[in-house]
Image (cartoon, rainbow, N blue to C red; front, side, top):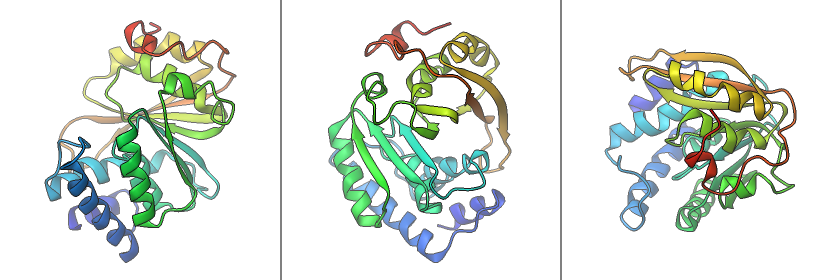
Length: 237
């Protein structure tokens, strides 16, 4: 895990032997399970360290300094990224992993047990529906989504999970100015305000990478998110 250790150090994170062992187990389980269910196209040892694990940890500098009791939800988590790498590094956070695919949830439950992770829940369902459930709506300090979707869609799927005073953090790549501009209406409508677009400057990532940080300032109107599929088909722009 030398690539991960070195990259994490540049982010100001010191990975202990326990952390490294957990990441090693994570990699082994990911590759093994990937032969049975489609979790990731990236399975090379060094690539997983950088493109999955280190990529997830680039979110760390945008998290609050006090992690104890921090409530975090990873929407559309897939193979558990970015949520699980952050949970390994900061075991004190309270994490919910949300995915609509039951097979992936089975993998995540296995991984939770294998890695000995506590205060971690796996929820199965579409964000459009789960965000209307009382136990999840406006209950989180941080919502994350690494899903491949345009920002207006992601805002509608994630901001309803954030408590007032919480934030949505979206990792993005490339030229994102137009996407951010298009998301302005959705951000305002869903109760958010754009706080910062934070550039990730690590030599491990030659492409342009950013964290779009949106703060939740007012309650999301009860009709949002709209029914399943609508945020992607007809984004609020």
